[in-house]
Length: 452
Ligand code: PHE
Image (cartoon, rainbow, N blue to C red; front, side, top):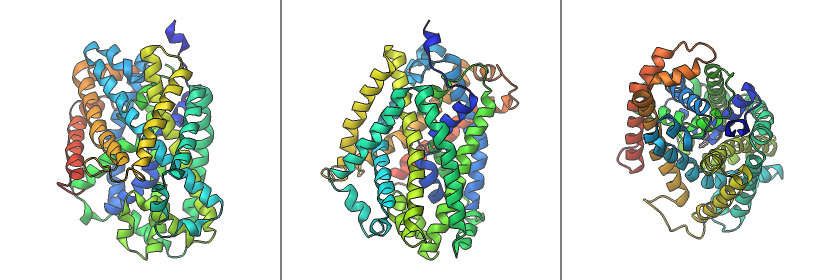
């Protein structure tokens, strides 16, 4: 029997930690703080939480239930529910295929920074153009990237219970502890209070449609939705686990880490820049360029920097493992291939494409697509175009093809689903419309037609 062979998480907590591991990543530690600062601090926080408990809850519960109902990765799951929609599974598996290589390149940068800080070289890392000159070298970033990709592949190779669950059981609590400790340290620095107020106090004058659009986009990315990951993890969930409780816990974990990351980074940068708001709006280079400078000016700078980058490394690793697992699961389901073999093939693929991404900053610097580097282009296609499309189609699929009842019945196998009515309306009408809005605005934003 095929069913009996499928691996499972040992229990609900193992599942919750692994799924939270996927959700908590660079999105929480780097993207959230900077967005919150840009969109009026407290007001962004409020809207984000509101969207998380409505929109995020709907999408996450849908994916987990589809996975557990079919016990298949998305590659097969959609087809089992309705033959005509099998293509949506293939489309959603394509998202992690695009993400994996470049995520590992960024993961490599994180290891490099953790290593530099551990060696006590915070002053060096804080030097002008340190980051730019690092990524423009042809060979060094490749070495760190190989290391990171190999670690990711090794965990996936070990399997669901011995690899993914075990890693998450250690790394996720460690991550939470490190975040809390670092946040307390930063908040206690002289002058940090102004930054804390700036971060938490809602600035209603900054509230506009774009606040919603940015928060919604962030939610998608941060909760690893619409790329088949939650379906894959849900497929390893035993039938006796409560889905609503798990979803709430995963969301809470993700949101708490994002909130704390903001509480740590915003005041730190605030103090360093003397209250200059533009320092926070730096985007991708905030973490690798500005933060080392902030650490360099702090007592115990190297140690704090090392703790921070190790924290980011844990968060990134549990995310890239989930991205790789979604592809490997698709291959084992579709081609009835052995996990280890599938993992090796995906590893080789990630190495090959990742090299192109890394070269995009060095020897192929002048090669751009739509004015974006190779890495940024892949990021744009997956996050801003494909994820919203898959998310929207999933809602339409559930709302109008298999009908919300198929999901609510699965959820109700254990425990009540109090928000059933609300869920049906969300998945059918509100979510697809909102996602459509993100899609249009993020594409317009990237093409430079409007600025978010
Ligand atoms: N959810 C992760 C984060 O917050 C990002 C992620 C993206 C994870 C793509 C997996 C795949 O950073």
